[in-house]
Length: 121
Image (tube, rainbow, N blue to C red; front, side, top):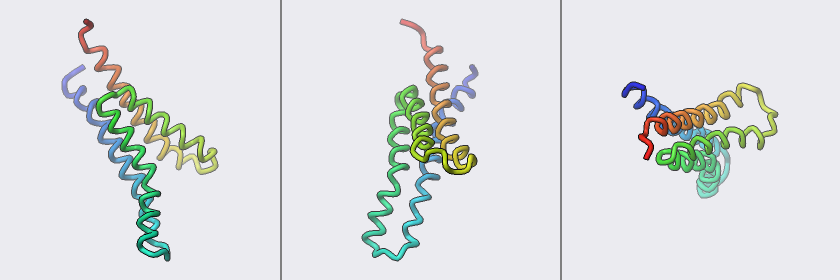
């Protein structure tokens, strides 16, 4: 594998994971359109950010241990489909679960390639 491809395989899943967390976090902004007092809106905002927090936690583990992060992102994608019971449009799952699964698979590919390139001891 060329050096450029190796760097791309290293950085693309990390950037995608961060972009995914930001994308999911944007959905939490809907609490500010309610008639709740500001204090309750801030609490609701923090609660609505829980999925983004989970993504960032998995991303933090993935940064160091690609296999763990890959498995975590795949689990998040499957967990979303399981929790929602597949009652939304397939496009929703393609976007949300698809991004998580793609990120997880890219982390697993990075781990697999790096593991094969390491000299065995």
